[in-house]
Image (cartoon, rainbow, N blue to C red; front, side, top):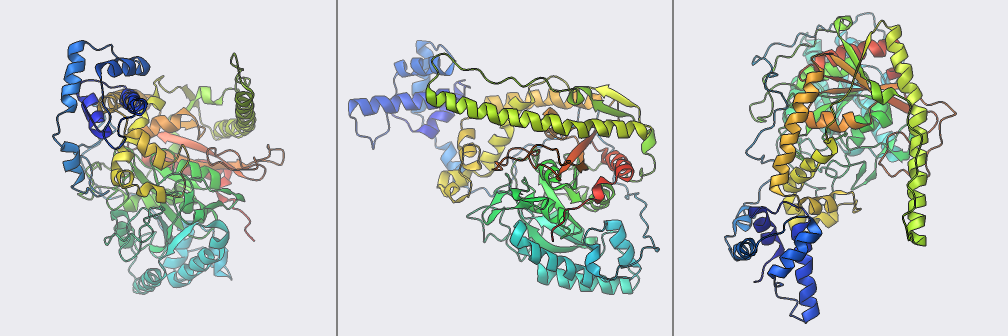
Length: 624
């Protein structure tokens, strides 16, 4: 019996072989037998019942009966061509699967009601315009809006200032893929004319912003940061772009992202951290975080699937709001994981993030994951009524570092690898222990603010074992890239990068995908139960919560939490992009606040109170 590898994967799954190793092992055994026998290598290899037995032992499944093995072999002869027929459809990245994820426990559905946003924002007429408009580079949205609406500055001048800064600092930070200069200048002139006529669209009117270049903008390339997509044009604005246009915001640039939303390496190089330009900005919302931190846009829109807002916000010392899954429509955004992708603001403060969120949230009639939930951002002065918890175990002293010991019969090469691994792990342990002082100081500050902290813990579940869901969905989203071989055009080609991850994910069985989703249902229910006890949870940005809450769809607010002192551990010579705490003296640390589903307003209120008490969000890097 002969077979090809792809058909074999399908058949193995169909007869209940759910180990991701079984198909690959069996295929390898068949190929080895073919080579040993001197059979023509151009022909498909032959599979035997004995090979199925050997593969089952290696893969940890079975044993299979004679009849089961016969059925398997017979099934492999069935050339129904279903996979090939579906591939011929040429499914675009924008086509979603016929299922929708809503991250809510059975009792947690939000009110089926769309209400007018209640955030009470009014411009401050007392704000004075500086002598030089560039002195506003790091001003908040509220400050800029007050100056614009009182006509003390013009949107055109503000837009030109940010465009000039984008051009000036891009040579060092590599955060721009394409400027949208012509579009921006036209929008700014319109905004000035409207405000001169007394028409005010709200706090974002006339404010320049940047889009992570996975958002489609008509008339400009949408590159996804990836080689092979540099000239891709999607001739329709993403919903978020349309909504910000309607709010009067001025799009000045399409900003970088790590290729296909991983890391900070894109087809044009690596986006840099303004606090330490020898290091990357982290990712994948690399450009948005770097540009906001450098004072080159008023705010930006990023996205997160598993850390892509929180990581660069941490590295670059800015405020990022990862909204509840299903709060912001993703129509017109690159799909990586239909059940985990989230769009959200990166800005200078929690209040700025709230102002942006109210402009982009709510159903658009196209992204079916978005609930028509009630949105209320009016709680800015009501944070003291919130119950505040903290993940107690995450603030406890770290256990002493324990190196990996030598295995029996260790070779010299293996010893060298182990010692290198231990050195890296120990350095990471030292840095984490140092940074914990900032986490503990945050708890002290909260207590000084009058907060009674309630200890809580995340449910003990295998969150990491659920993350292959992301890889499977991403591999499907970029199926054509793998099958065509165009994945070789992507800049990063290491073991952890997308080309290899997509290939590995093809061996993730459908049964295991469903089982992981069932485990995810438990996670949604159990993590949601924490928010019956508290309204907000304080936690370090890294750790288990990052994986858990991305899986469960809970919102997170990442806020700057100070700068490392001169006694901080020195950074490694090479930034591998895997850690957010390697920057060294004079660089930012962060803190994260979590909330229940669709309680993003509580995050904004509490985060704003913390920022007013600390002022860390007003720190910015010295670029000149």
